[in-house]
Image (cartoon, rainbow, N blue to C red):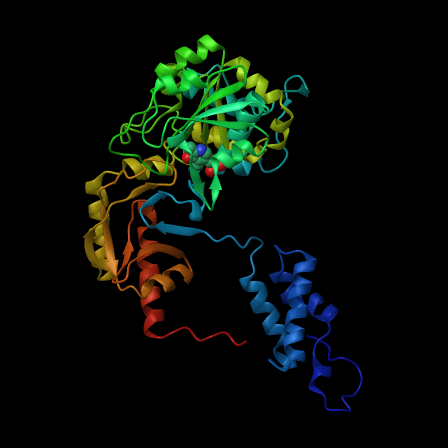
Length: 451
Ligand SMILES: *Cc1c(COP(=O)(O)O)cnc(C)c1O
């Protein structure tokens, strides 16, 4: 029970009946509902409710309920789980690769104190992330050593900075990539002082272009996989194996930024480069992201010769882009564990997807339509993944996004398309329930919360 403020309300001003902060904070229901929140956050919610009462938007008697409602809706993290019904497997807006069960368990185990840089047997300090390194080397036998950093962009800036300094990075003109949100890899490379030496033209680059560019100022030759676009028509590029010869003769490292993060060839994506093949072809160092086709946490992975990896690891910038223990744990578990969700979605049997989609169409009264899935920004540019979707009324899309289980669909002018490719079969019923709830809300719009 909340005590009324002391004293008579002689003026009849209802604001004097607004419960006091300390009384609200001490209220057992408030204390129970604030379990995952800090005192400061709870206090802010209490003040917001009191302010609304002071402004006359709610009555003083409604303040407690207002606080309890706000506490009920407030989670410690504002990030909400989302069911990805777009059919786009590596969706950057939705956090890229969803982690495997093994990786989630590893994250949980590493969340407390852990032996990330410590040898429990000897009690001495040990190499950081030795387990993740060993897992990567076992999965990519052509690599002599590995280093894990915060993301693919960090791997690129570390490699070019450590190898070129203020010297030149030789790069084909057709590989000048903007990766998204306005970030351009050429800008990233030059941001630490390296100079870009462009070779070739947009559509064609030849071995002689590279040979002419190599000189005393060359820090490294860089190949960047055009992961989010393709150049077709009258084109030519120099295979890594051909480029390796002149680089080796000149003593210049050949670096391949693969983007996607496949460690070995993936039959479903024959045109996508992989780390093991690139190193065997003659690259001295390969770079990749952890959360694209590798299917793991956000990370940048560098694989290659012991000499280059140790040069990079000793560079001051390496400390600024060091991977944290959670990343190392989830990455190791992704690489050693069963196929992560990204690869399951990629390899999904089309007939199985059809059966699940037919069932979804029957249960939701939607229409079965052909729908190609996509790898997404993570690679496989323009490679369609034939499949199916259920077409529903377009006005359901917003309700699906904001319902109890957020479902993100593809919105077309005439339809809202639900693609089950990136959703596990166990979650199909959740999607069906979400559609039913969305329909119910469209039929009778949710009452606006009092403001
Ligand atoms: C995605 C990508 C990057 C950037 O990697 P992040 O992990 O997103 O930082 C760099 N290079 C290529 C070729 C890419 O595809």
